[in-house]
Amino acid sequence: MSKPMIEACGIDKTFTLRRDGRLVEHRALKTVSADLHEGEILGIVGESGSGKTTLSRIMIGIDTASKGEILFHGDRVATRREWRDLRRHVQYVFQDPFTALCPTMRIGKALAEPLAIHGIGSREERPARVARMLEMVGLHPDMAGRLPSQLSGGQRQRVNLARALMSEPKVLICDEIVSGLDVSVQAQVLALLLDLQKRLGLSLIFISHDLRVIRYLCDRVLVMYLGEIVEQGRTDEVFAAPKHDYTRRLLAAIPDRDRPAHHSPIDEALK
Amino acid sequence: MTAMRQALLDVAELSVAFPGRNGPIRAVDGVSFRLEPGESLVIAGESGSGKSMLCRALMNIQPGAASVTATRMDWQGRALGALSPRDWRALRGGQMAMIFQDPAAALNPLLSVGRQIMDVVNAHRACSRAQARSRAIEVLGLAGLPEPEARLASYPSQLSGGMRQRVAIALALAAAPKLIIADEATTNLDVSIQAQIVALLKRLQRELGLGLIFVTHDLDLAAEVGGRLMVMYAGQPVETGPVQTVLKDPCHPYTRGLLRSAPTLHSSRETPLQPIPGQTPKPGAVGAGAPFRSRCPVSVEGVCDVRRAPWSEAGPGHRVACNRFALDGRGGLP
Image 1 (tube, rainbow over the protein chains, first blue to last red):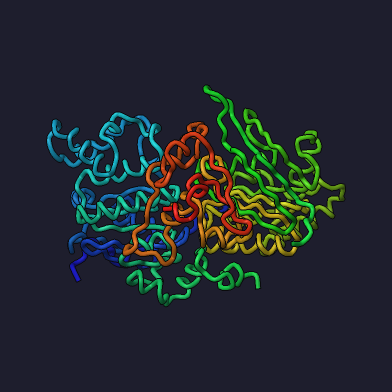
Image 2 (cartoon, helix red, strand yellow):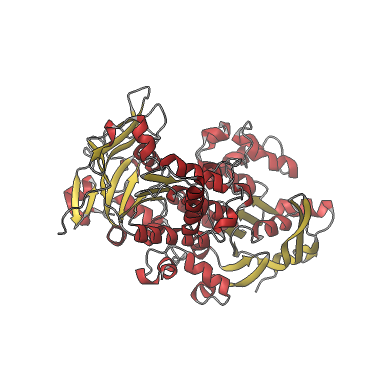
């Protein structure tokens, strides 16, 4: 197996919440370790509150871990400079295509921004890079002059992908990026993602609550429950023979048109 | 054939139109169905298909600018068009109730759960405070809320999303309705909670003989709900029939495309999903022709852009509105 691109080692995260006027500690991640290998698509699946988003945010330094460390190419990431370097190579695509883009910034400017931040290329060549990237994600280069409000949900999610790819990252973290899209558009974005992954040799972390999308897309899957990884393995193996009780319950709850009617969890629950 | 019972709802050629610059824009166009007590109708479609607007028109809670027309719209044999606002208030919430997608928005954050349910009970039947309270406890129990009596004093913000949706279901059940309309009622919930809520709705339907209209974008979920399925696209119904029949033998290019683009528990990259190219037409852009023609791989030139497809029989109780199917049958489908 190739060496890990990025590793999370023994990550703990505790949030302090105010509940009924008192401060309570909530342990969102309980000593979680995970790694992503070169060229692979890793799925993280779990229900709300399982910690999947928190873990991915810690992996690129949007949140800080209470305990544990992140390794990038085997080296510990600690200083601001190291985090900044990591973020050029590890990019994040957010769930909500409506709030992820600044409503008053034209698409072209939004896409050129990562180039300016990371000092990539000269000012003159940026419009051409933006146009190339728009074509790569299946949009017309004229889109550069548009505002986010003039785009559909699917188009915005393509723009978000394009923006994340501007700094030529090696790793892309996609947090529920198809959850808000219609099924027919979702399939378009998934096809685009697979195509980009192959063409650019990306490694992907794909976070989703939808096991059907995870099954389709991912080589390997981590199942998270209440801040812990309860099961992990090759996607086909985990889906064919889930070992943890929670994974089994999760799989049983997925609606499935091919399941014989009397095997439905819904009918089980009715008995 | 069993003798036809009186339908809860009997609707023919229902349309909802909004005034537009170039004539009316039809958000819902030509929907017909019959729903008997204890039956379920699943309405499936993507955003812009008109499924939510249809539900609102059935409850007479469509936006003010909308005009609803139908050749028939009967509730238990009574024409809904003739009802006064007062009659509507008694019917809505009393006889037919709706569960919305977002329970947080459907519940009043400033009133306790018990108070909200008791308000509904009091609005629809003359009863004492104590009776309303015991009814509230009863429906919270029916909706599967643990410790219903203790929950009366809770506020919506103190409950989880799944619990809130159970309260919204209790609220819908409060006045013992005959029909429940669930509009994407499980979409925002975790899958395990979704399975519980769907099981609950099916149990209530069976035990109380309720009619159920279940709106979803998820065809796999439609299969779990069962009953009849109506697939909608850009405001128009395109295929209807028993859920299992339609999913096993889809006869409209859109239904086929939708099924091929949705991953299942068994799909993998070896058999790539086949996205439907393009996007849903903007409201009002459909015009006179078949609604799916701009994305359809087998649209009939000179036909699909000028006329809507007639309904064809595809099997017992299974009908499809597709010009290609009308011409070539299943052999012409992609």
